[in-house]
Length: 198
Image 1 (cartoon, one colour):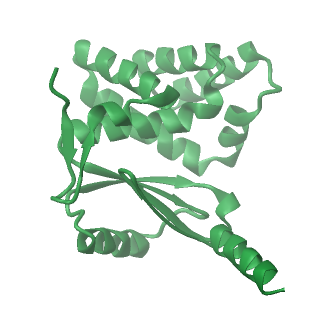
Image 2 (tube, rainbow, N blue to C red; image 1 turned 30 degrees about the vertical axis):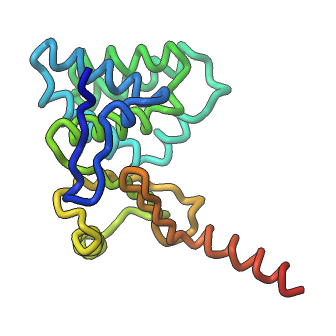
């Protein structure tokens, strides 16, 4: 069986199968294939992007998704109520319900990122997973695209996530390459450099 790959502007090729590995990839692949089978792929991909933005923009929602002490039924109902209020389709709500029932809500954001990566790979794009301590500004997005183009990634789909634990800076993953310019990592390196000098 031939492996489908993604051309990342002449630098590397990433097998689609590698994107679909792991728990987030398995769930994302299932949703992608179900949406394609029901001819709802474009709306589902748009809603997945909207849900990812909703999660990134709401600390309360992120807390609710990550809180493992909540009763399974309560958390599933709460998330469904949010999706219903925001106008998400029954397919998307059912999918998130399955994720909730399987106790995977803490991984929902990763599943949505994997779905975006699979969709981009099938369109022949490269996904840059960008994690920042704060939401990126428009200027930062332009600068990031420019830097990625300089590195040979001209056809790139940027997926953004916020992780306040980074303190500042960015972590960018493009395929197998990781560029870590976060303040957390810099402080970690400084700590070990100072221990070595002592």
